Image (cartoon, rainbow over all chains, first blue to last red; front, side, top):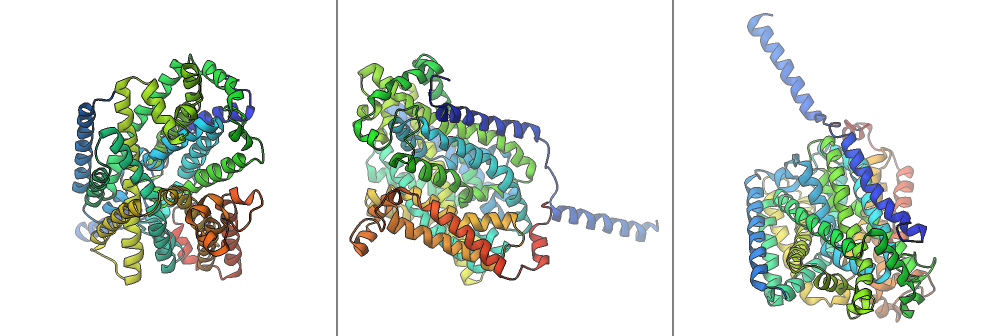
Length: 62
Length: 529
């Protein structure tokens, strides 16, 4: 195989390529996944929303 | 021969580019979060390339490439582990949790992450000390190597080269912080990638294609020198004889030590905390995997194949062509087999590899002594973090330079292995339990940290032949180089013993002590499923 007789060597030669391919495949498959917001950002947004709702209630009497 | 004027011009342009990126890092740094974790908004390309360039030093290319020239392609097991463990497992399994937990706990260094997770100041300053005391030898290996390289290629005096080189790196690390380090790393990694890609293509095409080149190497098996055959060497495309001295060294030191040790390297772990979300890490995996394949994969294949080149040209194997010094195999091969212009590019590649590794070492040491040790022990936190870290970085650079001058090469040479092994044994059990085991306790973490550190040091000083003989402490105390002389102990890497013991200590002590407060654990694991 590939000019190498020892399966432990041609095996690891291929394995090195396959592991790099795994990284490529994983990266492509999850390219847009995991882009979540941080807990504190979410908390901040929630408190903003609440503040805004309260303000609207107070100012506009909605 | 090499035209010094051309080479100096190329390097001058390169240094100007580095200077500009260091300046950009400085301009983008407003607070200690920017200075220590790149403001947690680094681009995935920059993050992955910076991780890779820090990971791969000149010695991984020239030193280990030369070892492949001597012993053959068995070293590719290291490449496989570098990619699968060092990139895939590190990013996907460890990296994502590290980033999230680091954010939950507002940690800015690796010891700080562990210390806040286990609510223990001891962990922070003890880990900081292990890093600050263990890393200088590793840094001087890289520094001295680079200075020698500048001396021989640019015809600049060694002392001048050492001073000048350290000053350039110190300048952009001190000024630009982690952003400066990572921006310059990305440029350096790009140069490294191009250099190694060309080297691979040229080597295979020179030797008539992939299969033909490998077959020619396989056919050289009869030429293995008797002294190497006695160590288990059976040819450059064959694994060493099981149980032989070289087999043990290959498996335990290279594969376990360097391959798995990478998971707990502080200067690499901190990079996970520099990106905004898991998405950036997903993208970085792709880049990192290909990058590492192009680095160690190419170095080991080309190193081994250089035997074919030298045999076809001069009828000798690589180690003979390099006058018996395996470190010279890659440089001699490049000089004789590659076109002249590539020699310049390859020199730049090696310079970039050394600089990117050193800059991160200095940054990690600076944060270790400044933030983790000084600020934790002095009980202060706040606005002066950047200043204190800057002073820490300057101390780290000065220590590395002094060590390079003072210590004999025989002690400095095993520096990389010592640091990798120490980091893995001391930090890996505590770090993996911090991320994956909610039941792990403060006492358990400390038990693992202390066990890993001291068992590792004991093995290095008294058991593992290579370091024990170089350090000379065992000879002073016992009158002989190692405590146990029967095989395989003198060639079993310390990590094989220290890491499992440290794991056992962490788990056993955790189970024997009171579980941590649910509220604290919940805060650490917020957003982690």
